[in-house]
Figure 1 (cartoon, helix red, strand yellow):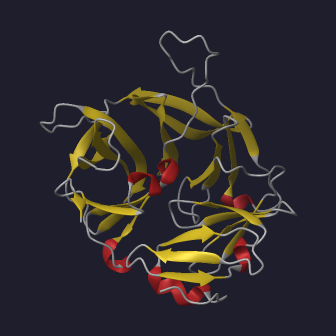
Figure 2 (figure 1 turned 90 degrees about the horizontal axis):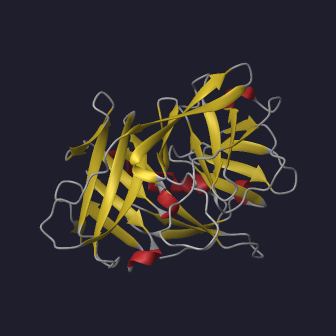
Length: 311
């Protein structure tokens, strides 16, 4: 049951993680918070979210860019702590994604903004403070191949990305090649791009036709994981199977994982993926929760042990 709007975000601490719906510039500037654990909802007025462009990160921090002053910070919704970042000289579009390379306590932690439509990466050091600046780095990973197409070639963009132990991992146009971004200083800071081959896991069921696979790269317990949702034909109303895979860097191979311990995965639109403690947040152990209104139901939970959707 939804309550009246309140400014007390701290009262929702026990309900984290939360899905936040911004209703725009309404008279009361309110936001609806939905608990992933029990799907209860509550309306709040969050000062930190007013008149700002906000980008969520898989580690739970939120990048907040003021729409008028361009001031930027990392905000922890659970504690209220803010870390000042350099001002941004541009507006952040709805196609921007944000990642942290490491824990914010690390002196080398980077904030990375991936502007998918502009084919640009923006990054800065978390501990650089307001006196530092954002570095803008365009990238080019080739063009999409479209058979017998008379239209202009389209450049590939980095969409699916995860940060693990100081490096950023992504798919290079094809899901069978993993790209790596690592910080280099020679002499100016830049992100060095490399890649390696790793075959994408395939659906091992006995079904005749596999239609599509949705993939999510993510960090969990300092390891690079891949979650795959397999669909038959092009029916996105039913998930045929779900699988989790850990990258074995010594073999350059995705290895199937059945037991992820006391972890739960949170999956969302635009390849967003995060993990958290299941026991601490009241979630199903070893389950992945997909939040997507395009799959028939707003919330779908799947078991990584059985590989099936949980009803």
